[in-house]
Length: 397
Image (cartoon, one colour):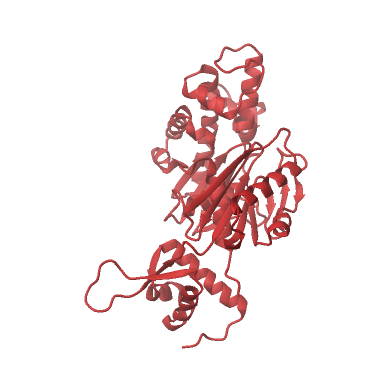
């Protein structure tokens, strides 16, 4: 039976929805696809046949058979092509490639020079994609980029990022497309991380969850019914400027002093923690961190906290208090199924224990069980960028 007359855009939209559904389900029958996509089975058959013929899907027979002829199932063909994802913030860039079924294939990592500039970021970005494409450019289908700060996905621009002063209206998509000739998609890196959790991590199977990410800055991402919620002007989740009453967190017996309100980024981002560690070392505070007077790296700070160094432990625990305060507010406003906390701090046992204790201290027992740490590691953002490419790429018709 021939396919009903449809415009190319409508065909691409149906194929995109079909592939996304198979990607979510893993293995599914044509009948289930027809029912769940609200299309007649003959129409689904036309689309599935074409996607099988073009190599995007493959058919398989169920392992267990009942009476009669078993229905053919369809699944993604992992060998059809690759997607590349790149993520960066002020200190580091990571990139991965995944196959058509989103299985990780390769990854690279670069430290960014100080002071970091837009030119340096774009140079490393091109290098990362070049390295992952290697000698097989023909099977790369799309590139996803997760950038910090404000982003305009429609125009493909990185708008602004406070930790890279000249990062203003950067044509990220145009730069990559001009070099590689591939579809390129861009999104804020915290939202990309939420996509990574949805497809690869602890967000799988959830309808509604939130991610709190702590790196050079702090932000949140919200997933609703498998889609990123960005708000009417794309600022949903930009919570780094939330102001927190520091006195009530660290000395609850003292009277509230409004002058003590500070932004959560100024109190508890990685940038703030390493800077404050350097200041306290310069003031003569004893610590295993060295050399005195220089701000330690994040890795050194976490290593010292895990070794129970008093200075590092104090800074990490104070950050955990702030983040627990943020988690409680995200929970009250969004009531998600789960709140995922991501970033290098979660690697410190001291931080995670304090975060859970602080969540319990707010008098909401379920909150400490609802909060989970991301298990995707330092390449989680890059996986999210790859998931961004997977999510928005469509077969060319």
